[in-house]
Image (cartoon, rainbow, N blue to C red; front, side, top):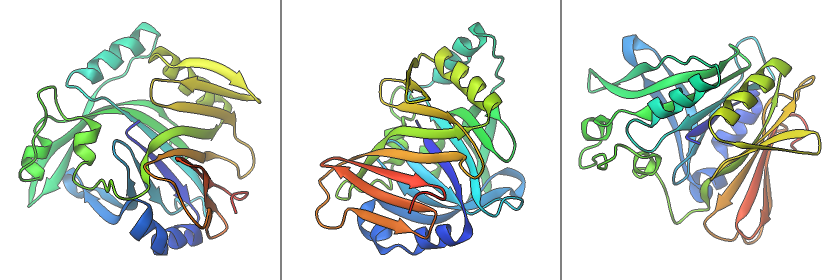
Length: 265
């Protein structure tokens, strides 16, 4: 996992953006704007762990309730993207890598290469990405790639807050349309995830991450839950609600579940 993209309704986004707990205690938190090549870009809320992060947006123009989602997988070594492409090609998928450049100080520098997995437009997108080996050197003075390239941990190091709660995303539950569910499931299998079934969900297990895939219906779609590993036990309050569309539940000593959608709160 590199990061997940979650679109929520407007009031929920506002509640997340204004949460003192999220901003000051839970994890590194930033309301940021990214400018890429040719003047493109986006603005979102960023919640960073050690190797993974959560990117939160308001609803898309044609979906006032939110529900759109994205999953970005990542590699930790230079050449890992090509290895992933080979695995996908052997299973019948034919990904084509592309490069994204980011603007810094009026210049465009290579940021990451990626391949699309599922791209259903407004509803669900997924990809695999590999950071350009020179990105840290060019964008963050004093930081350089490791011998094997830029790892997710190195990329997150500038913002990660080890004294706070969030460590990383460990499980993602997605409600997808039938065609997206089938395609993403087959791609995860090609990348080495092992499939199991439980409670009507298709579960795909990797070394650090699990995906639970269920079929979407009505307003239940996109990312509906994230299981999070924590760095320390949460004392006191165990449930934090953000509007009517999201809630963070501290489950046990070192885990929490963040839910999204109309049933969250």
